[in-house]
Image 1 (spheres, rainbow, N blue to C red):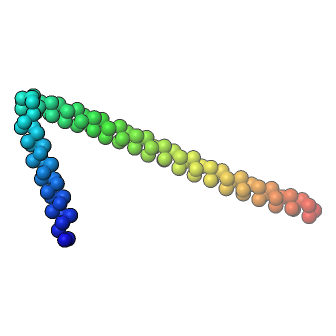
Image 2 (spheres, rainbow, N blue to C red; image 1 turned 180 degrees about the vertical axis):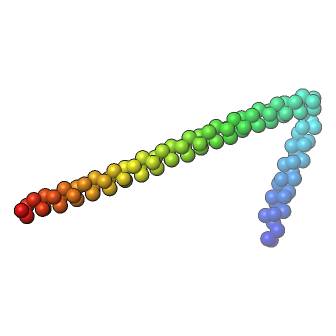
Image 3 (cartoon, rainbow, N blue to C red; image 1 turned 90 degrees about the vertical axis):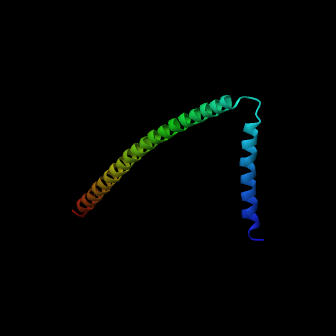
Amino acid sequence: MSNFPKGFILGLLSGSLVGSFMALLYAPDKGANTRDRISYRLNNYMDELSNLIDRLQYEKSIVSDAKKEGDLVVEEAQKRAEDLISEAEKLLENIGDSKKK
């Protein structure tokens, strides 16, 4: 019973391959024309896939650059916030010292 799914899947795949092969053999068009159409479509799909990969790599580089710039902005904002906090603390100390006098 444990081999049933493997055997079923293997039978399904082999039946699909044989059926596809038989369909190509008995197609109403000449084999050369069918092969040319298949080749043309595969080339188009490969070109589209290549363009998609190039576009994704470009977008990845843009996202990477934006992330770097975002990290720099956050780092600069943190530094400015720390500077403002230290200035505020100094002002509070000066105010406290002037009240004591």
